[in-house]
Length: 124
Image 1 (cartoon, rainbow, N blue to C red):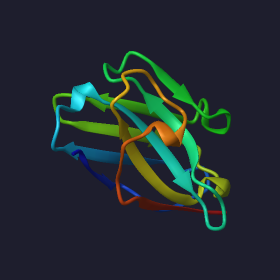
Image 2 (tube, rainbow, N blue to C red):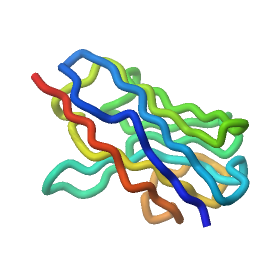
Image 3 (tube, rainbow, N blue to C red):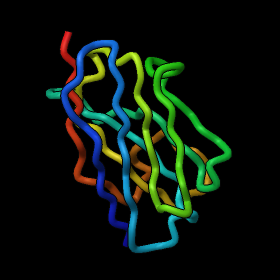
Image 4 (spheres, rainbow, N blue to C red):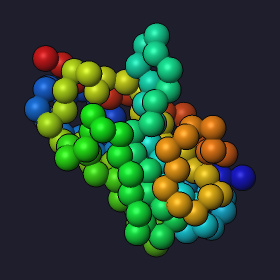
């Protein structure tokens, strides 16, 4: 089992920044690729960003490219999502997830473990 706990969400004005963190415990963190997803009210959960187990590969959803950066610190068992130039359309609950696959994975169906989520609200 892998336990995931997100933090860092909050309310921010458009154009602002937030840094989300996801702390993992329970298994060897470096054996898991990680992803961030988000879910807005009335919408399906969608892919945001993913990073391979080593951190050498990353992948982003088109609307966040150039604004969001995913990274990981395997020594701290933590994955991050730096979000800059936030827009009201980024408002959602953000979830981190872990997969036993090693490469960056975009499909939510390939992830085995999920955190509880953290709310991000961007005001206009």
